[in-house]
Image 1 (cartoon, rainbow, N blue to C red):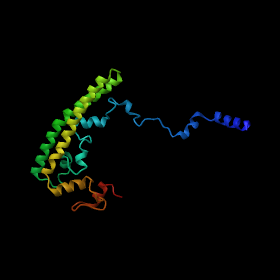
Image 2 (image 1 turned 120 degrees about the vertical axis):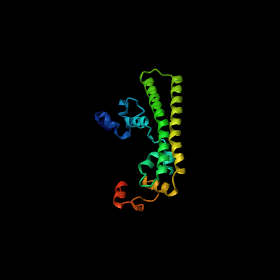
Image 3 (image 1 turned 60 degrees about the horizontal axis):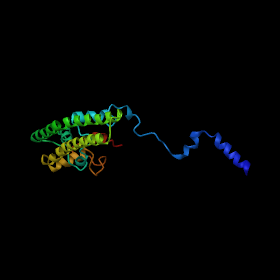
Image 4 (image 1 turned 60 degrees about the vertical axis):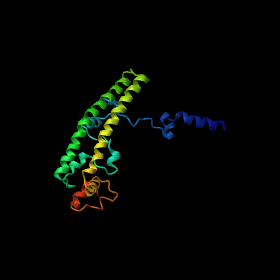
Length: 198
């Protein structure tokens, strides 16, 4: 019995340390690896580009994914959903108004995230300063999100019911399978290619 215990101990001592932990299932590598090289850790280059140019940055998903269109995509598909000249003019006005408010707010958000980043990087932060910066970030974020969502809120009054339906089909939000349901007037081959149908 003593001999057997010594053999087991000898085998365990000869095992590489990494092997001993291999079955633990632990992987301590962060999913954020690589992001530590960012100028502002919380924002990618793509994030900053969207914020600087007044793009959506996913802030209007509550409207978009519930079938309430945004002005940018409506203008992109104005031919497909047959917007009239008057509709285009109204949607362009809505977009210009939204962008005029969104760009400065996006720049403010970048600046505040930069301040938060710098405070942690230089260790010049305490709970009071943290609360102040986060409060300002929250305020700007709320205004920016309101700007994008309120633009979506105004589009249904400009569109017909059929245009709204077609918008959502073209965006791929229809519950029907887009590969099986090609809208009337669309080239089936182009439609299927656009929706990655096999």
